[in-house]
Length: 410
Ligand SMILES: Cc1ncc(COP(=O)(O)O)c(C=O)c1O
Image (tube, rainbow, N blue to C red; front, side):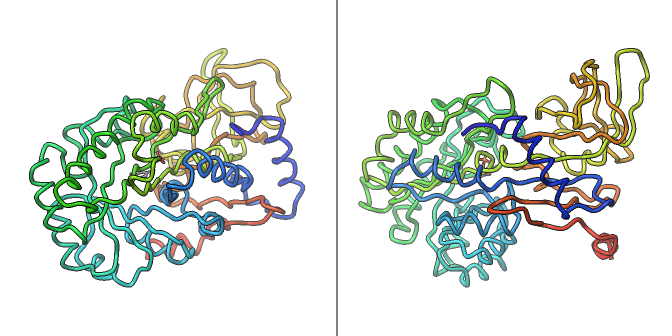
């Protein structure tokens, strides 16, 4: 399964509109299709085989009902903060990987209460603190392999000056520390980037980390037993995108056979791949402005509050969009502006859409990952309702009430 086709999205939209789940106040809502998530979980399981265990990055979609579904399928959760660890714990995750470049002293102490926890120390300094404060968890060290994968700069986290991980340039120090902590530090972690399809360079980075593990194990046998290969597998956003997780696994099998021959336990942390295509966002067209012939500016009810990356990195994050019902076949050069009061509040500029009319609905495709998960309170607007479909339609998270917003700022 790749992207959900437009015909199906239109059917899903009609179904939600015909249900009793929407109120007049819902001028925007999000639809999440659990069958897409289930399919992705199955694809990852079959691509990596039995030697791997999988966690899904909470930051890409932290909805409780989605996390429960993931853990119900036996997958674990990857957490970028201790707050996410608590979400994962509440979802009953069978495995929790805690990554963060800034874990506090108090959080490290509290992490003793979390079962089935792997902690990826982000530096040798953090590692020494963790070894003193946590006696329960499995502890790994994140390595920065100095490998650029061609991802957008904001998604690239393994360049020579990256803030993440312990630099592989400090090899001797890493080896000395892990050899002396043998028995307590049992894995290495690497995560290079997100949303790039350069499987060769991603595999190259993991190869460097496996070589480091082999060097450590040659001195202190069996010290490094797990390689956490991070996430980063891209989602399809456009016609022509063709990203197959089994092709990535194949590239890894060639460059890093040790991940598949039982030499190491493997952990994965994909996020975007599971969720991006599972959801779309519908927002009613509030107004259509024409400032010049052949050009329209749509004003809709979600903007930089829901689509942070799209607004603040214009042109980098593409979403196909469609109008419903689309009564006009004339295409126009279109900017899609949101409801916030600042000049950068656009979801897209210069895209082609049919001539629009106020009251129509704009459907923004592939919004299941890293969109509502990054919700911003700028201008204090209400977080929209999220409706999910598993065996039936249900509200996964209700729209914020005005009271929720008053409480947030109180
Ligand atoms: C450490 C770590 N693991 C996993 C992920 C998930 O990445 P992706 O959603 O690209 O698969 C991220 C994303 O930022 C991350 O920082």
